[in-house]
Picture 1 (cartoon, helix red, strand yellow):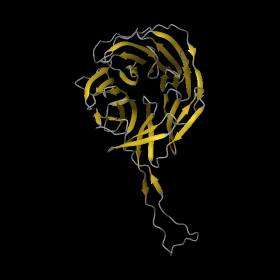
Picture 2 (cartoon, one colour; picture 1 turned 120 degrees about the vertical axis):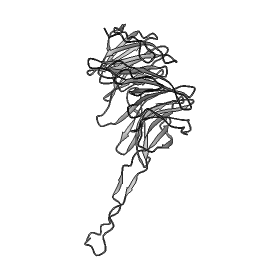
Picture 3 (cartoon, rainbow, N blue to C red; picture 1 turned 90 degrees about the vertical axis):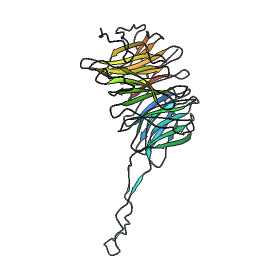
Picture 4 (cartoon, rainbow, N blue to C red; picture 1 turned 90 degrees about the horizontal axis):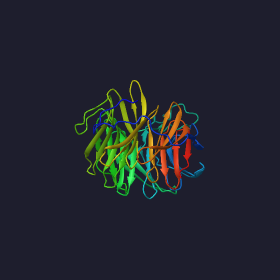
Length: 376
């Protein structure tokens, strides 16, 4: 039985160690195998397509797939500048928003043309040698319609390289979290691409992996840290953190999830605050799934022996899902509103993304395959 932990606002609830399985394990169907050389940064699921986005040696892309894995369309970005795409989301109108970093290319001056007296029998003209990759200091948003048409690019110049890790969009705007060497960053933008004031969140030991935007313009930031926020002291070697930021932006609430000697993280979340993460200590490695209320208090929580973090999704009605890997074997758990397991399914590999749409279904991306789960 798992060791009982203290019930604190800054820590998790006591965890159920024997969740009930109400249905036999059934394997999920593979709808698409991913080529080993295809660089995919993420997967989204909309009303009529599965969207994959990523990078190629010549630029970024987003592609739409049918349920059977066949391609509907491909949109390639030709920004004529250095850039990378690292995160994505869908807005309420079905538009695809992608976040990354970009910079204008820097030309390198080549050697001067040889003097007329130099030996040059072939008449070769030596000019610029090309360009080097500059620091990607501009936090960048790209907007693409659900039909695959480019609809805008928006940039926020910063003073150091940046790498967005997550973004969330609703009718009130877009929230973004990103990594920088000087500390994690939060920034919001409206749907016209106008950025607000950036907020530095912690220093070099804080990482933000996920953001959930609320309808009032506030945001929930998730990740891990050893640093103090609003006076909440560290519990373990490294704690999972939940930080609420208002529309100002300003940090207004902080919750820590930790255990003595353990490392924890929150890296996945739904709009209803079902959170997925991991716990690692000297003796155990667990996928953690916790449902939080609007005041950031836990309502139910489960853990599973795992070699990966838990990735979560919200389903139709009161159903929710979590996927994790344990030594190559993947499990998809289906929960009711109280955290009771109503079904379990198997797949192979580590889940990178789990996405659900009530008209298109639930899909799991592992890096090697996309699996589908038939929902009622």
